[in-house]
Length: 96
Image (cartoon, rainbow, N blue to C red; front, top):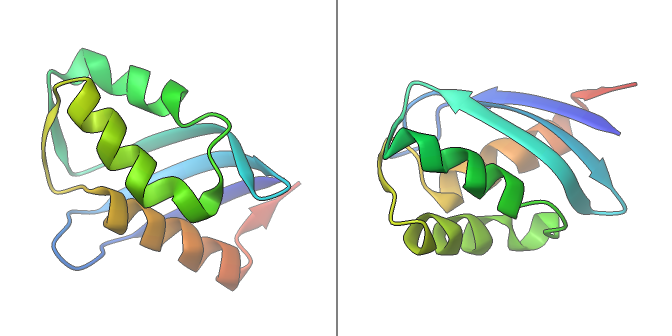
């Protein structure tokens, strides 16, 4: 299923995402918003690294990948991203 969401969780800037989710796991995810990540070019690796992640493990895995890639972020963290994803799931922002 295609899932889209948008939100501004506490402690974060605006986060927007589009994801393909199957059986509770992220197949693909695109994360955009008003946050900053440096070096920016490594953020794609984090998105790719989330492929296969259980939605329930999203916060922890996102933070781990950000550290592993050496990315400093302002306005986004794993808990904030997971919160936006959970909200979209519960509010039914499913397409297709």
